[in-house]
Image (cartoon, rainbow, N blue to C red; front, side, top):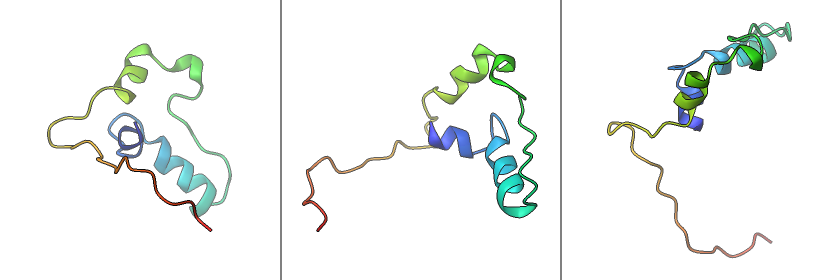
Length: 69
């Protein structure tokens, strides 16, 4: 899901949030869609769809690590 969100393929909201908060510092992002009520079911499904073959799954180690001290 993170890759889907930051890639900008579905929405430019991540870059818009960075622009509003860090670049222009106007704190007024222009979200697309402007509210959750305007988000379609198809848009939500795209965020949770499986990655394509050119975007491999992230393979993280599953062994327990020692606690940080």
